[in-house]
Image 1 (cartoon, rainbow, N blue to C red):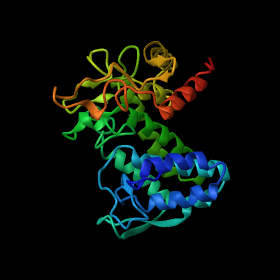
Image 2: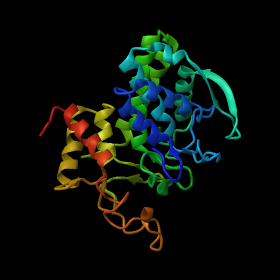
Image 3: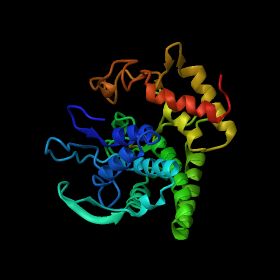
Length: 305
């Protein structure tokens, strides 16, 4: 994904997930380029500029690095080439410009898990940091204490994929460690993130829930419902209830809204939420990508209607 602002890290990884079945050679090349924009502690840049000789952005997001295992898993699943995980390629240097230490692709992927594991909040789920997939969710984490349920669900999804790869590689130590991480993260989601009829979206800096019936605005968010199914978090009854709530509250004749009700302002009256008016952009619009996850979730539940 390129444009006037360079290449988005998560955007490029997501694009390559669609390219893997058609051009795995191209997707492999881009995976290596992405790995070269990951720091040794496991996190990644948010935007990079390969054509402009411009330094990459240094903002830290809760999800960027988690797309790396998803792309690597897709490539191995498509091609059967486990040797990909043994290829060596450098991290990005701490200055954000030079090459850093070299590591195998597998070590890069494990570093991504390590970063998330080292940045969990008070509820045991990932800190939002600058944002997760929703770039505006960082509004609720300006003090660095906000947490993201979507990032937690994505983390569980990635951990399950990494467990498969560890088994294929015969890495028993990694498999044991990852199994424990899955259990801890899934337990944290089940214990602290259910709102009665759907999954909360996260917690703000003060520990107050986002995406709860207790909230005046943004009571329900689409992504934390769909990703609960994708990651198989909670019980089937909870997953069904969450998607039923999506159909009841978020669905429209044009598609499924990202959240409801929209935010008039946040956090102060003079501070518009995300720069978007009610029902537009990140403030309750209909996103094709988020709708695709809803379609996948319903398919996984066996509800094609």
